[in-house]
Image (tube, rainbow, N blue to C red; front, side, top):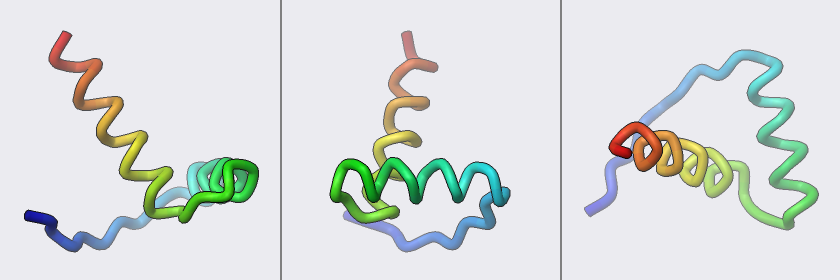
Length: 45
């Protein structure tokens, strides 16, 4: 089940995520989800 959340990103973080989304032809939301998922996974190790 998915949950909708609202995030306030710093200008720098938002710009980096937008750039990666553009370069990889993905949605900004998908880039952010990948980053969050990766951070959670790394934290568990």
